[in-house]
Image (cartoon, rainbow, N blue to C red):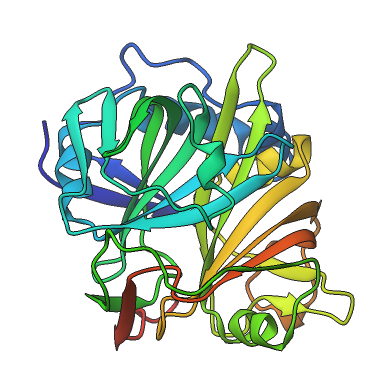
Length: 331
């Protein structure tokens, strides 16, 4: 298998195209109805049918299996018993995420009782994962289901795996401020409105993670978690606590927005990179497919979220980060 990947970029499209990509034996159409709706709306469905066959795999390729053990944290999307999606993060010494074989990813992690996503990570639950290295801006995504959870962590069986290019990611270097197997000593705060601290985190943010899901007509649940980034303050927040998120040119997979078109529920997590504080939000979304005005820059569409539950977790991560460079021009 190829040891490196290439980036295919054309007409605003961006996706990691690994050197060992092949269409042989892959599903002829990996997209569900929500993703297809938006691809058709922008006139790109035919091209995406071919690209999807070549980039979305039911297993981890070798370079992705080598990538996950390099990480100090992983992003998780999970769905609770009420059907609310939550985005969260788990951290550990590099090597805490590993792939024992191409069909599985193992994550060594403690139980986090204050994390609203924790109870949604049981045997058999559908889950979305994102591995992202902020220092290199490399990222790979997968979705699947939990095949086993014990005191030492959880094992995920892969349904879909694919890479993403490094757009809209601020480069950062991490360090640990406490052992990764030690939970935060400060209690989480639950609310339904954004307080001053929450608004400050959102307004200063240059990125966050979003979890969404869809129950497929063919059976089963597909959960996705992905990164969204921009200049600090790119997420708008009004007096009614509605968040407005610009959707910039990307890979045209529309995994997130396609899910939202079929199921309006979504979960977000914002990080204070100085402290490791986490702000988790779950709520209802609406997607506007029409191009917004010039005040939104290069955004091609917008989506909004109205929160129903908010959880602020001081020192929720045992990590903090320092900026090491601004992204390349245009990112």
